[in-house]
Image (cartoon, rainbow, N blue to C red):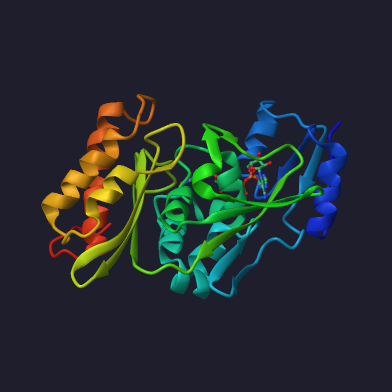
Length: 287
Ligand SMILES: Cc1cc2nc3c(=O)[nH]c(=O)nc-3n(C[C@H](O)[C@H](O)[C@H](O)COP(=O)(O)OP(=O)(O)OC[C@H]3O[C@@H](n4cnc5c(N)ncnc54)[C@H](O)[C@@H]3O)c2cc1C
């Protein structure tokens, strides 16, 4: 039989994790975990529900936006601080192609990252925003850059007794854009997704971020393509070349959702379109 706890504070949560790990699972929104519990794919001896542990906050701390791990997709989509400081994250959480209202009301940012799906829709905007993950255990606290957090499909640097407490996002400048292709326009896991961020100064790119999902074992940044943009004037040909370069650095696979060829072709076009939107190029199609 599985033991069930619903701690009221992060400290209680960490004590429970420490006492019961590794035969213990954290339960947040349950949208990933509950189907696994039902099918028997996961069968932990202890379940620790973190929805009432005080981790569902969004606040600004000096020059960073701090999103508690139990903040839901709906909170991300609707919170004014996310809209003003991390609009691309709100856009990803809002996209009608992602989940249903019911899922968005319960699914959390911590669960999305801990699941470590290559297609996780919140990972690419957080990569484009240079986010860090704040990880706590009874042994202490550590901060890991999101780019170093994922280690493979379904795998992260998290140890069995560790909890993602929050995601920390620097208040960085620039215009960011999220784009996603799914197999249909609603409730669809990404066939490919991208988030880009451009900082333009005197008509040239001073800073660039390009993140891609569902085209490699983990969501990743495409540094070669980013470097191509620095010091250059925005333009359609440049952005197309960047899209092609970004996908060259990826290793998409054939699966039930799409072929690797489709992911490469559509992904390159998606990056070019996202960059065009971020740079405000006339004639760039909207989402
Ligand atoms: C119908 C449907 C549609 C979906 N559509 C999308 C979509 O469009 N895009 C997308 O990216 N995902 C989608 N998902 C997947 C899922 O909803 C998201 O990944 C969601 O954010 C998971 O969060 P959760 O709170 O439900 O996680 P849970 O199911 O509660 O947990 C998932 C895993 O993360 C661990 N975990 C949770 N919180 C923490 C924490 N704070 N610290 C450490 N570990 C933790 C749990 O132990 C578990 O292993 C969909 C799922 C469903 C069922």
